[in-house]
Image (tube, rainbow, N blue to C red; front, side):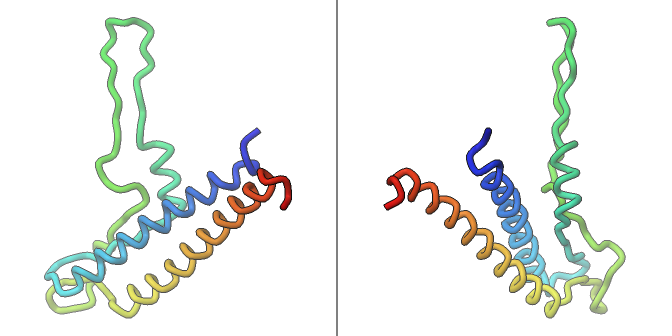
Length: 131
């Protein structure tokens, strides 16, 4: 049985998603004036699916078999809007949407951090004997 019945690890997955989302939004904002740049986004469901299938290793029945692993070189869960353009130069970044997404993601990240902090503080309280 894991500590907190897996709550901390679930919060860790959420923080990983929020961190990836923040990087993608920051990259979109930084490239808002780059011609032909297509905006990117992160999907938690796609991120989870990519994480499940991102690393596959061979089942070897003999030591002479070649061992191989495949892994994705791209960041899991990140995808591009390839057919979307907001400007004449082909740029697909909507600054209003990106800024709203950044604010929403910041609130989500801070909420997760508060939950992790609460869980760790309750562990500290138990370790101290309830005082």
